[in-house]
Length: 242
Ligand SMILES: Nc1ncnc2c1ncn2[C@@H]1O[C@H](COP(=O)(O)OP(=O)(O)O)[C@@H](O)[C@H]1O
Ligand SMILES: [Mg+2]
Ligand SMILES: [Zn+2]
Image (tube, rainbow, N blue to C red; front, side, top):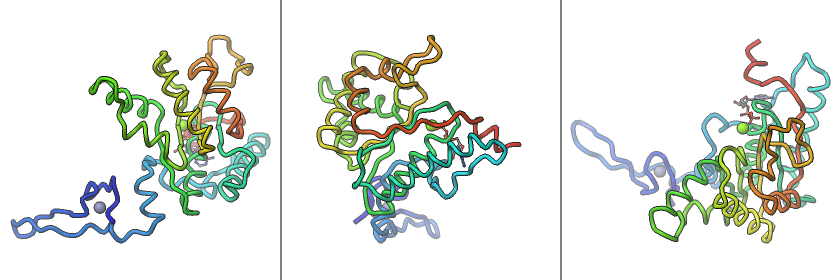
């Protein structure tokens, strides 16, 4: 079976090429992919993170406190990816500043689960909302079924950068319905956010995650996710340039 979102054949199973000025149609090789390859192709993981794993997550050498903190976080991810679904909470929530490796580790968990035969989808939070909203605006009343359904029903959902940007009633309702549905059916979510948990807001100018996604969604997430608080480390992109 061809892969639904195959970048080469768009799911048709056929690729057109030009040979000696003539169009030739070949069978796309996505037909022959293994299940792991198929799930990887469908996962929507951005190319930058395609190979993210706990194996290539590097620990800072010059900062023993950060090193210990990140090592412990990495171990949590490795254990979750290895032991799921036999875990206390069927999800992970990475909280921390920008550039500390939240998305890397969240994808590492998802990649690990895909390797074990589970299926999962990566959604950037803002993109997911935009896709749902654009479908919603177009056909009055019915949302972008595909994106919305996928977020509700896919086996494992990775929501990256949860709570980024705008807050409206619509956003709050949509996020709450996705999270509540997944929580009710014990369907795992892996989320990342750079917003603090409520009650943990050090800078009063900053919203908490609950302020952005609503208290309902926050409390369900809290129920179903193990909180992974990222230690304070320098932005990896700065760190790695030295
Ligand atoms: N400890 C690390 N080891 C290797 N690469 C890392 C590490 N931390 C971050 N990166 C890489 O740095 C970039 C930024 O990290 P990212 O996970 O996007 O941070 P965040 O999501 O916390 O903003 C990514 O390309 C990521 O793969
Ligand atoms: Mg990120
Ligand atoms: Zn294909």
